[in-house]
Length: 181
Length: 268
Image 1 (cartoon, rainbow over the protein chains, first blue to last red):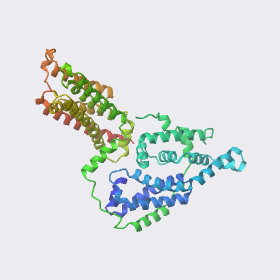
Image 2: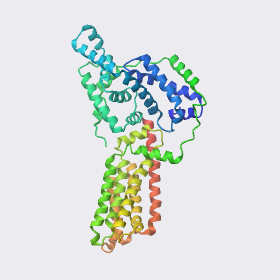
Image 3: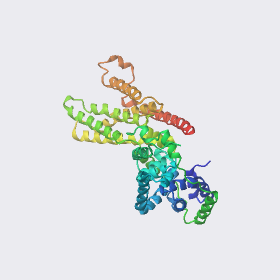
Image 4: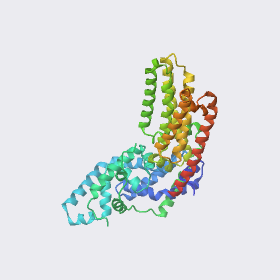
């Protein structure tokens, strides 16, 4: 199987079939990443993923083989997601904090929703500052290594580890006492 | 370099289990096909430029540059400080007629120590970078070696220039000749030993022992006559042989790195 880097190089040389192969490989995971980064907005995530690939294709001439392709792809996607949550951050932060307040009030309907572990995890991750959220999602949902995260976010590996460490500590606090099943 | 404990930066099983419960929706094959169609429509000859491969120099520079991300600042600072200390001691002992001897003794040790720690089997960021980057691990190791050796070389040359300017008894070229070849030999030896997964401290001990024997043979033969049986490798006529040994050690180490990393990648 050709590596992502070889396929990116093939696109630079005009090979259209390489576009299809790269998209097939990365479309699903990329939508998943953006879905998690945009507050579970599926349509928005799909739009941003599409925009990521379009931008990638338009800037393919800037790709330098053999730089890691995956880190480049996620750097572009992160950039788009940041643009999005910069504009929508205030509203979402307020909405999320309200959700957590309601949980404390123990309203039956809301409690039923919040008891759903998936929702609690999603909300916990969304309470993290964006830079920690990016590192956590890239590491634990996209499976990127520390070095790949560093390359995608343009930060040193030490900073990646700091963000993961602080982010995980915060998640442990938020999810403490919640059953695992 | 790494101040975080593994348990701080890795989620435990319970947390991983919780995280796994948050699933993202999967995309349909139709959605992916639509995207490919759109991208194919975007695909124009204008967009794609047949870029030539980055030239060798630019690529080499990039390879060396990315190594700075994984080599801690401590190494640079420590190397520079010890070399400065060596130069300072050399100047302080001018009256004792030692010439540039202290600096000649210290410079190869600094070079050797730096090289030992850049290829420690315990250096997780370095191993991780190698696994993440689609670049030959041999090239990565060679660029790292070039970076650290280059730094020590440049800094030692600067110190030598400083010594030669301050002390008129010291001549620059013989001074550089006196430390450069041993520095290359000890660096290559410690690189070789580190690659073969020896403990960094053992690697340093072996290299230091060799350096001590070479120095005793060269500088103290009159007091230690039993050493006369050994070749005086610090004599200029042996430099050619030493450089051949340096090339052989680095070559062997690089060839081993390829085999070792191939195993790591296949086990990943």
